[in-house]
Image (cartoon, rainbow, N blue to C red; front, side):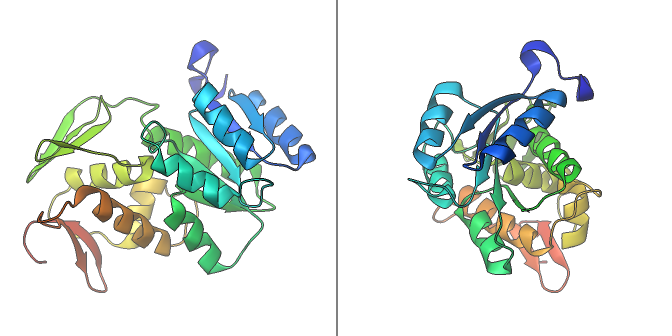
Length: 238
């Protein structure tokens, strides 16, 4: 199987889409690439299937009957059992604010229709790597933040910090290079990969989500914004 995926190690992908022909195409190609595929035709069915099958990744159409894709994504992020589930939003909407809205709702990535299948597969694999499907042993620590890479767990001052896969990979990257300033383009290459085209504003959205997750009341914001340059993990102004 491609990418060494075989047997019970095949990632399960839930395709949430009401266009039957697109579901058929995605199922055929994803199974050919070594994924297991489940499907749901509306938002309510999607939430039920997520609870029942516990997929490794969700491909979620924006425009769905019964419950919209945006609302499904909100509910995924609200529920403790699924708040770290990788979600890629599929949308025919091409306006910049729509893409940002999808990310702000909790999606890890978005792909506009019609999409290139190879690009979608690359984004899926990158997201699965960031979600911990490929385990990386070791621990990282900075200030009062501890990251267990094997368990895919982050704590701050002893409390559990819940991060989505993209925020986890962002924090991992910054903790591997503390006090160094990275541009948005450098972070895109390191976290999303050099072969995947993502707009630089996407970094800003995920940094905001990372800050919201790791900073409790009274805690130092260790993610520093460096005007015109980018971001750094630091306890001192940079």
